[in-house]
Amino acid sequence: MEAARPALARDPQDLLCRFAETPFASAVEACGVRIQIRTNDPDLLSIFTVGEALPGEAHGFLWKIVRDDFCLWEAEDPSIVLADEVTTVSLGPACFAACDALRRELLCFVGTKISPREFRDTIVPRFRDLTEKALAAR
Amino acid sequence: MAARRYILNRASLPLHYEFTLLGNRVALDTNSAVLISLVARSSEEGLPRSKPALTIRVLEDPSLPAGAGERLHFRGLHHLVFAWIGPGNFFTFDLLRGTVGGVVSPAVAGSALFWNRRLLPIAAGVLGTNLGVAPIHAACLEKKGRGLLIGGLSGAGKSTLSVALARRGFTLVSDDWTYLSRPLSSGAPLIARGLSAPVKLLPDAVTHFPELEGRRPERALNGELAFELDPAEYWHCGTKREAGPRTVLFLERKSEPGSQFLRRDPGEARSFFERQGERLPEELPEVGAARAAVLEGLSRCECWALRTGDPPARAAELVEQFLEAN
Image 1 (tube, rainbow over the protein chains, first blue to last red):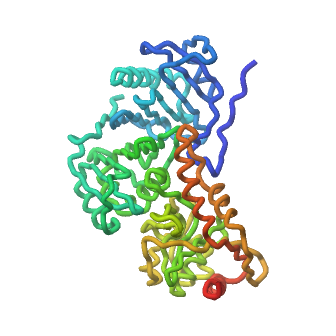
Image 2: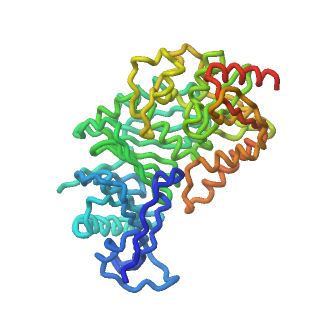
Image 3: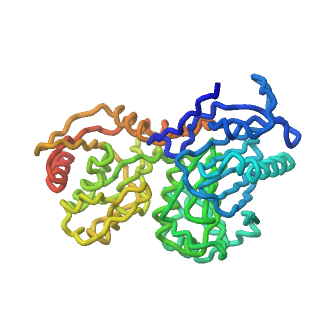
């Protein structure tokens, strides 16, 4: 049975959607580490070649990906900003991602106009690149 | 498609300027001379001796489209907040490191409106804890050295009452957002600060201030249609950067004429502003603890509710009389 996807809530105390639930989780081996992936969109999770995430198993990196139901923008040309340990990738509101090398976290919002396939083909390779650079920097 | 790629470091941002924001030292690194001169013109006087509490890095890219900064989009996860302000123009706020980094067009870099009414208020709101302040949705005024915070639900008429009080000789510190910080010595009142943001009045304020007739309300930062006015220029009222609030007044509207002052427990003020505030990232518990510690200072203020159905000018007159008598 397909798992229900939690809707992003409009909460006046959480206008930034910081507290979006990300109940779907798995783990992949990539970039030489075990990456834990957490998301609120099972369609995004399904694009990864997933290994079974064992409870309590340590991971080397976290990718937290929030599908932003309120974001209806089309992707714009990508921009990458490097500032100390944090690298931000922006495709406009349609996709924001920031990789923190110190905390070993990649945090991302993806708007509704980016399909799982486009995400897999154009954005995930950037995630791998950011993660590799973050690990190398450390 | 090829990505625009930027590195924010000393080489790309050779210009350095330091200024004061809400009583804190802030460092600005940029490649934009226009931005430096704009900040120098509008920043608070005096520079604290402390190290910068916040570092802002702004790279101006002449190839970017204007990005008027009117359509804004914000999102946040953990310690990072993203702000998109137009095609190719965006910022990342980092609560962990106390930094803001962004790329903007020359039009945005040279916009005093964007700097004073958008970026600095957003930075103060998002990175309040880095600046040692707790942002609260309240107005602040002062008369005869006595600070007054006006709280209440959205639409209660805080701004309208504030303008009416300012017209009676109260000095305006802040209108929509007030930034509280702990006093330097124990027992002293909290310090309430404001930014040089405009007073924001909802379109129906024209009923009480006929001088607004003919003006067109514009889209404010939170998406509301509102008149955004410089109170000193528009009503010739006094303004100042900070005050020591001793009284918290909650404004409650009622439909029938008449006004009542009702005593409230000071703890209510603290919990009200805590409930109204942005939920803070669980990954940084110290951020929430710092805000709670500042808001705890509200328990030393007198706390009242003003339940009123009177016009703002009359309510302001009653507030003035009430404060003089208490």
